[in-house]
Image 1 (cartoon, rainbow, N blue to C red):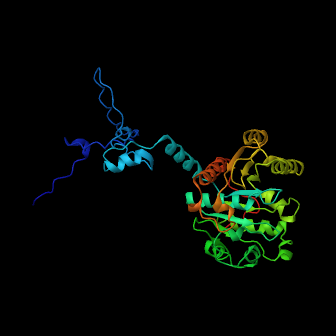
Image 2: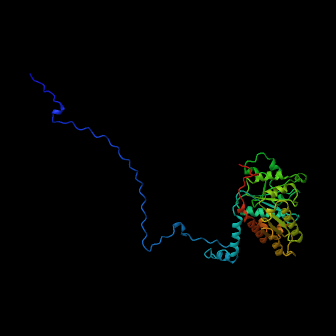
Image 3: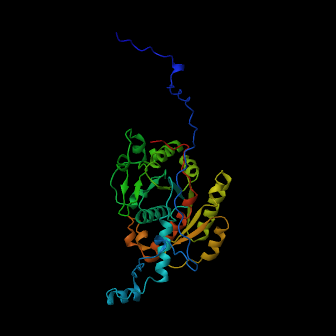
Length: 364
């Protein structure tokens, strides 16, 4: 009979059980190593100087503008452009004038053209200046007739519509530029004109509130707004015109009575709460007759410069004296240059304007 060996207790055997595993130890936290920094550029060798960046190097030769006239133009044409004498000093000066005229304006800029004395060229100045701005700039320019006594502003450009300021105010569907354009006429220079009432009885009732309503519409679509005022200063719309104006152009003739009227206008502005416009005003001496005046224009200019910002002379011109539609291409050289200089003087003040956010501004 086979016997089953007895199982010995563990303490009597040579085999020992494996020791229990040690308790797990927490792995110490380690900070994430920072990303490697980019390699430093090699130090320049002694005597090495870094050159200018590529965009600072003039790689292209600047082309010189061809001359516009004179012997310089003749030389340029005869040589087929091989010899370019460049522009003359007068041409460079004119280019500087154009740069001043094209200075950007933020929001809209409002110019009131006024005079106490009739027949001194107030409407002519408004159309000539507006046409110059419109032809030399890329933005929109409009002239508004605020004359209560049957204004003639619309007669100085080709008439395209019979609409007036009243029709614009009565239009309930003004939502875009084309809606306003339906009420204006446009000259070949791109100047637009908003005519006044042709009925003198109705025009007398054109009030300050109505003028403010017109400006509330125009300021949304035009950058430069000129207002051709009446010869008086006491009609209802005049307070609105002056209150909303950024600059005043005071038109006078180079004669003693015209100068006295201009001085009286400045005194009126100072006495009725518009003295701040005097220092920014520009006096225009518009010659209504050919030939030189018996008045010393230089002394007259110095007299106005003691109160106003600038004085500009507009020479007599046969085309302006016709009283018909004004075409800049038909003006004489001196008169055309005078309007460009006047536009440059006015544009020098464009940087002082700010975007209006108070009435009569209307949000889109």
